[in-house]
Length: 477
Image 1 (cartoon, one colour):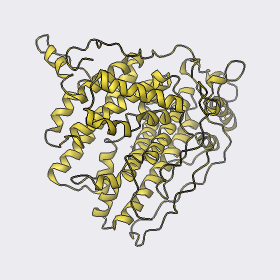
Image 2 (cartoon, helix red, strand yellow):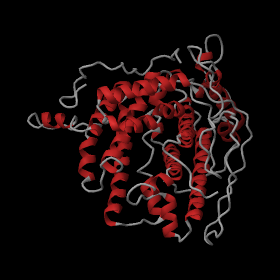
Image 3 (tube, helix red, strand yellow):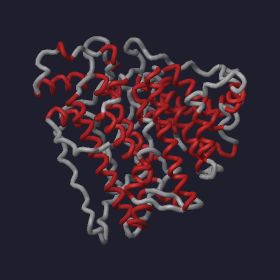
């Protein structure tokens, strides 16, 4: 595969990315407090998570020995009464006209509509369209059915989370095979000595866990390539493998043109095109984005570019603090983490699912709040699970427990425990906001997108918990 040159197709043809399906596939800013969750919203919230047996190996969380006087752990909301099954694959194109459904104006009827939409299609030949039924189905080729969560890796004690069903091992193996082939043959992502680290990232399990409604492995590969490319940029430009805050802005800007193409004169365009193959991060960005835009709508592609610009802005803020030795206030750190976070990953959940959340629904302020809270909560999960890894790495790494310890004069243990509570409050806010939006706008595309974001949040936590190659918990218990 080429490592430089034009934006034309590679000399060896990769698997063809999927086009957005025309029919149902047959293969497998917080300016106001959250409103009280209505009955129908509570039912939606209960239906987001399938029942899974939780491992009982985690120790009980301790209480901080000297909790700060100005801080009181938030009380979680009362759990909603479970009544809904996990939602199914409902495509935008097949959405019923809610205005034509009798009685949708009152709360009880609205609840009925939410139940029906989340339950999925019924009748002859619709079994493959139900996420709830697919999760219990036996994978192809005689592989064992998905079971409860892996026992590998303890949960951070006291962390509010939802366990997931074990990701489909057939899909995990195939995604893992394809992404390694892409990394080695198409974009020459890493030298041979980094192969163990690439394998240890377990990106196949990660993406299968985060996108349970992806209709095909081709759809899963859209997210997997982008995830690997984003981590290549982070490692090679910012952190572990030669990264530095010095000059980061210039490197990020040029890499961003692989996502958001430069439109320039005929004289200078060839030089820009050649630059896209000049290093592994740019090769990965270019290839991953080329695959993505062939499967996404223009609106979905532009949404992703916007969220990647947000991510790069967060990288630059953290780099600036590293250059000056500044330890931010806790609220400043959380502001940075709203940009330097996982947001670009769940924001493409509809593309990976083979449908589209229309731009006007994505742009709703209440949808933007849901997405932001999901990104913030999942990023604090990363801070908590990577805490010891970062402490053992060269240099000083900012994460939420470190910033809380320094700025609020707490012990390392108490700062870590407070960071757990910050995460929990964000998670409760995310779920309340998602449930309220489901009640306010029970449109099939909105309900499915909210369900996809919730699945991404849960899968992200499970990957951090089970990836003991990368992560281990501090010895606070």
